[in-house]
Length: 333
Image 1 (cartoon, rainbow, N blue to C red):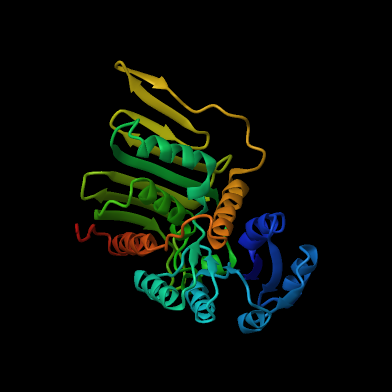
Image 2: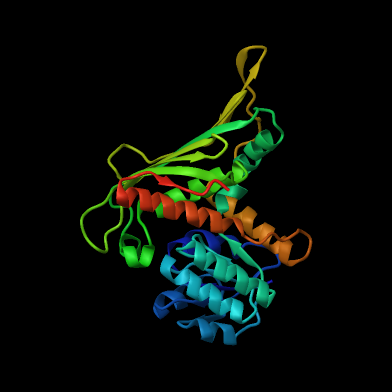
């Protein structure tokens, strides 16, 4: 499988390049970044033959079975559109686009070109998340009633384009909350969201992004979601949590703990297993890239990322509520 990479920033260096370079049946064929010295250095480090600064130049070295897009958020839509026009399969880091309409345009372009689009929602592929999904879909904990999630990252952890609203599209919530939002909606089978209320802390300025966000969502069926995210946390260590609350039990991640009501008592029924050989972060990306490889080989079915339209619309409502200071009521249909 010949793979090209567009964008040589942090996520490419920490996840995609290390994972893909060690996968059987994968050839890292080309790397493109507007910083050519960085692109050339990384190409040499990972044994990539071609390095360039232009996506069209990268395409000249094709065809590719897959091109991975890891550029700044505001460039995702344009870069994916260019690759789809060349009938190239794309793996794009989240978000696919900064708007629901943008996602719809890309899905339509993919359908027209016959190419496949994958979105980097790596949390869905975590081994503990897969176990949690089994408990929920199997009905062992009863109906899901709520999700409580959050991420606290230290002050100064984000800089560069991520701190610039026109390029990033948002701050702490888009960077860390999007993954939690996507995971919560995916595990709950995307119930229609009826109401959204959010508050954010953001310095004054046209181009500034929020440092923190607290968002509460209510689904039409009564399921509730809360997300508490910051990248300006002053504490002794980072924090990340994700907990599901169901009628007859609960489950949380990091580490995984599952509690079920049995004969009127709360009993821990967490799955047992050996310690992970690698970080959850790398494991999730390795699992997702293995899935993509299987889909492109025809051994696993392909599902277009239509659900990303719904995620983008809910995200837009969260920012609208935070900007206005009012609750946003969405269509219950």
